[in-house]
Amino acid sequence: MTVSREQLGGSMVALVTPMHADGSVDWQSLERLVNWHVEQGTHGIVAVGTTGESATLGFREHDEVIERTVEIVDRRVPVIAGTGGNATDEAIRLTRHAQRVGADASLLVCPYYNKPSQEGLYRHFHAIAMAVDIPQILYNVPSRTGVDMLPETVARLAEIDNIVALKEAKGSIERIHDLIEHVGDGMDIYSGDDGTAMESMLVGGKGNISVVANVVPNLMSRMCDAAVRGERETAERLDAEMHGLHSALFLEANPIPVKWALQEMGWIEPGIRLPLTPLADHFHSHVREALQGCGLFDNDAR
Figure 1 (cartoon, rainbow, N blue to C red):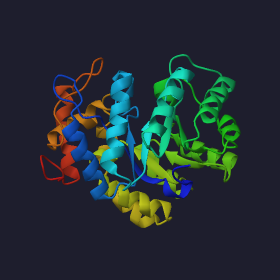
Figure 2: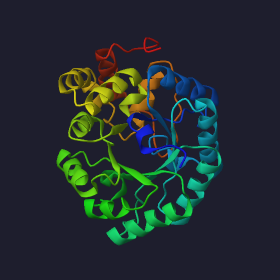
Figure 3: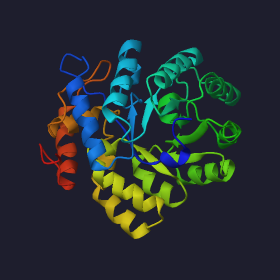
Figure 4: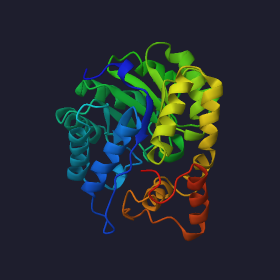
């Protein structure tokens, strides 16, 4: 394994893939964003997760974003490569490439649209783990995939050595409790839902793979540190500062609002790929107010 479980966790940003207005990848902005996150204390970078528009990047682009992110990070923090897919062979191919170019771990979303059974989910992730020995983080997000990987299935997968964690985005603290009870020390549980991330960590979760961290990396990092340590008062104070972002950045499908926010902050150009479209005009004031509530606007976050 490239990294241990202990080296993963905390605030892991689900990084957007910056694009020019014509939709092509903006490599210069990618470098600036990655360096900013490392400087601001982000504990790990997720490259080409679903927030990074993995569904609309071609294989070559997908591979290159991961490779360049690894190069820019230069071992300063772990790089977690988004390598999931709804075809098992495709996910294996992406995961092999990520390992080859030096990613520290992979993030594998549950297969979407085809709605596999619990046995199908188990066999899918088992096949990837057997094919590629990189540390693997599974990702359950029923609202986007149409399938919910149940704690019993997760517990079976926790017995596989290189499956080290689960990103759980159901948004339920009860589910987090249930998962921790089922997996014991077999794997770590991360939140994939910013609105419930603090409570998830206070009850035993080990980190947050975050959309909100894209715009407030230092604040999210400090909140995660406090929550993982069980420091409720500090975690609640820091989380309250991000309260507006937890809702505003999900007014439309992720990553539409967060890319608009980063554009407003001066970090990226207004590039996003169809079928996603730019943030609707009537949401602009809501997102802007949430940014202002965190003391962020234009270039102030730099």
